[in-house]
Image (cartoon, rainbow, N blue to C red; front, side):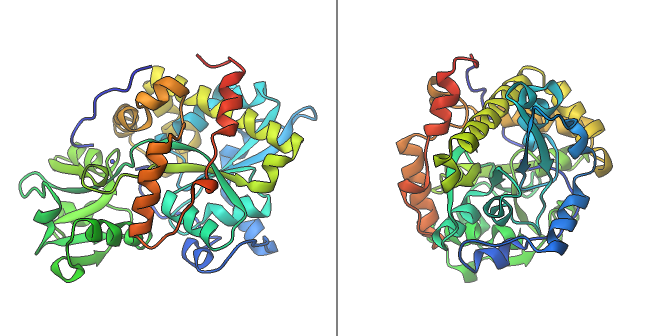
Length: 366
């Protein structure tokens, strides 16, 4: 399945406030193993809603959790398709998809065992590992990070140097990436005014800010559909190459035959799900809007366009050769270098393709 070409004006998931529970920032400030408190576990259980019922409990199926890093939308199309089409069940799993959000960190959920696999942002995941979290990265959804700078087409910001003297909206979550991006492009922090924003593009639409750190497959599409024409460029294309939406598991689980088999089965479902989503983006958008993200008030047109735009970021020559989520030495070297610019020390030993090698060795995915 060849990678499609990248369209200019399209970036992340859905709008709205995420659930609370584990603070991403507080977790990243401390090392390692975090146990689930009763109140936090209860909060997470209350977030699942229709996602938990996507797979009906069966004694023959192993019950496991998949923790997302954002709300359920086509950013996780592969997971939604895998649940809907029974790909997880075919692997012997009853998967509960746990929604995330800007105030929830997937890392401690995986460390605690609440989720077998988590999807997280690369900088946060590797910072957690650097702080002692016993986790390993087993794959990367986005071969190119969707993180971008989006501006209004009437006043475009076409490259990093054009940010100088402008006001850019940056969420707390994106601050490490933002600081690293300034560093690699030799732009003093004082040369750009930063406004702290949430996950809404409206401050850009209203002219309160000149640019916004967002996702190439989300905010530009939202604004374009509102009649606000945009211009966007990927950080990846200006000195900050990095994979994103990485899959993480407990390192110890890779050595447990039963849990390792479950991880392989879940990732097989993910790979099948993503291929199915690219083959039928309309179905993927429908699942996000009318089933798994029904309470979010998502736009079907926006989700469809998001799904179409993701192809050029998820697929690459490397995934054509090795399979989806594959992490080549070259990509990992670039990612580790980019992380170091933001102050996060990462090692190749934190990544492995061994689970993906088993997924594709089974020959069940073309």
